[in-house]
Image (cartoon, rainbow, N blue to C red):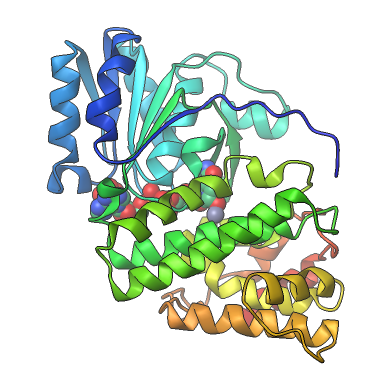
Length: 386
Ligand code: NZQ
Ligand code: ZN
């Protein structure tokens, strides 16, 4: 295991009526002017907006609304939020939504405090923001685990890059699984696959030998697979949904990464695919993963074989490591089909004339795993995904 420092700054309020029970005390600790940030309006249709607005009013807050945060949030939207926060002297941001709203607000919280161009500061000058507006998150769509980390995935439309900016951690995250029950089923499925992908990408890092983080990781993967299956047959099952919501948070709250260097090559590729096509994140990953993993054989065979047995329940009897590794990829592929996830970019509606070479040429190459890809290999992966 690698050396590590572990500290976690996000307080999680999980479970039934978590907002009603905990938001009043949290709001009492923050300033007068609160920004209520949300997406395209699902929270107005399912009643979450009214409930939270009631709690904000009861706390006597002055509310500034920052709405219309799109999936795959753009850097331009970040700037809009930062302007609004400055104009209204916002003291606290309450981000209500899925990964997109939650990520966008992480950078708004930093950008509102500085005139520097944060994209330039972080990606070119390799600096970090230092001032932040404090924030709380209310999760309405699970999957990314964004509520528990300080990375924000932002699309810079001008530069055609979808990449990470580092903002603040949320002071607290409210995870009431009931709030996620109105998610469209396609988003439940893609969010679950995203969570599974985070676990796999972490597992595929180094060191490669089994360690405690990987054993917890295997349990998370089994839980996601099992509970997505329950959810596919019984979409309103709150117990299964609760497990999925927490497993997704576990995937990105650092626990599984303790003592490891992670891989995340599938994510880097998907993010650039998103920069060029604005596609759904979890669906893109579902198409990329099996293809990328076939390209990682035989170097990744020891880890894949372990996943076959410990996560997918493949009987190891009489099989070679390479056979088991192939059985893992087969099991993953068939689960993707079982969940109704797309298996090609065409199925996702991605146009045939997409510039895959440009995507491969601008993808971050990771070195966390047993296999470092070249741009030509990534292009081959993308072309196979069509
Ligand atoms: O915008 P509204 O109207 O709210 O609708 C949203 C959106 O259309 C809808 N939705 C959310 N909660 C709902 C609901 N609809 C009905 N009922 C509810 N309770 O769901 C749609 C998708 O929301 P979005 O936030 O875009 O999805 P997701 O949570 O998958 O987030 C995707 C973004 O997160 C990034 C992705 O790249 C993408 O930009 N990621 C962030 C990560 C992080 N910070 O740790 C890690 C991930 O790997 C990922 O890259
Ligand atoms: Zn992801």
